[in-house]
Length: 374
Picture (cartoon, rainbow, N blue to C red):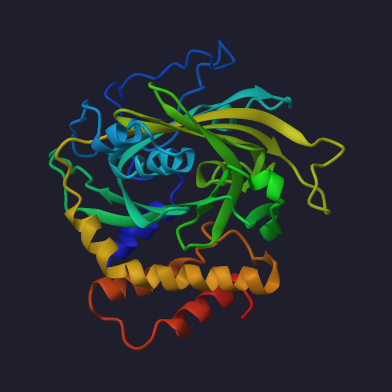
C-alpha cells in the first residue's frame, strides 16, 4: 500500500474530522452560545487539531448562483440549478452540538461540542434534466512543524445523488440494513430525493424533499430520515446506534450550508426505537461550504479523472444488488470496520497506473466481504 493511501486511510479511521484544521483562536477553549452545562469547565470542543494551509474565500456571487436566479425557468430547472450550485471548491466547517440530553450522563466527551474544518472540491459527476450526481473529494495539505504545508493528500469523501420524482429510494432501517422502497406517485410529485453514499459508494441515507427559492437563498429540507452513526459519534459513543432527524441544504451567493436536527436513538431487536428508553439526546449540526478564490485542487482533479469510471462500476454493483434483493444487511459499519480498504487500494492502483486486469472481480470480492450478495 502506498504512503499517500496509508495517510488517507489514517484520516478515514481517526476520530477527527476530514482535513481538520485549527481555528484561529485554537489556544483558547471555544464557548458555544448555548452549550451546557454552564459551569462545566471540561466541556471543550472536540474534533480535528491538525494545522492546514491558509485559504482565501471568494466573496463574489458565483456564476452558478447567477444562473439559478435567471428569470423564466421552469420549477424543475430552477431546482436543478440549485443542486448544481453546490459544486465547486470550498473551505468546509463542521459544527455539532448536543443541545438536550435525556439521560443523567455528564461525560464532557459525549456532551461536548464538535468542530473542525477542511478543504474539499465538489465535482459534477452526472448532469441530466432529472438527475444530478455530485462527488466530494478532499485535498489536504498538512502544515509541518515549520508551518509550511506539505504535499497534497487526496481522499475520496462522499457522493450525493439527486433524482427528480423518483420511483424508488433506498432507506436506512437501522443496524446496518438498507431497503429499496417504492415511492407513491402523489409523494414524489415535484419532489427530489437526495441519496447520500459513503466513501465506498455504499448507501448511507436517502430522503424526499422539495426545493423553495427566493432572492436570498434556495433551500431543500428532507423528511424524517434515519442514518447510521457518523465517525465523529461512534468514535466516542457506544450507547446508541441511529440518528433520526431532518436535513436541510441551503444555497446562497457564495456557497451553501447543510443543517441537521437529529435525535440520538437506541433500537431494539426489531429495529424500532427501544420502548424502554428510545432517545438519549438531541443534536443540531451545521456544515458551511464557503467558496474559495483561486483554489488549487490539481491533485484531487487527477484522482477524480483517473478513478471516476472505477467508482461508477462500484456504484453500479451496489445499485444492481438493491434492484435484485430489495433489502441488504451488511456485516457491519463499512467505515468502522475498515471494509472499504480493498476498494481504496484498487483506486490507488488505478491512479498510479498499476492496476492489472478487470475491476469487476475485485469489486465483487470487496462487496462480498462487506456482505453484499452477488
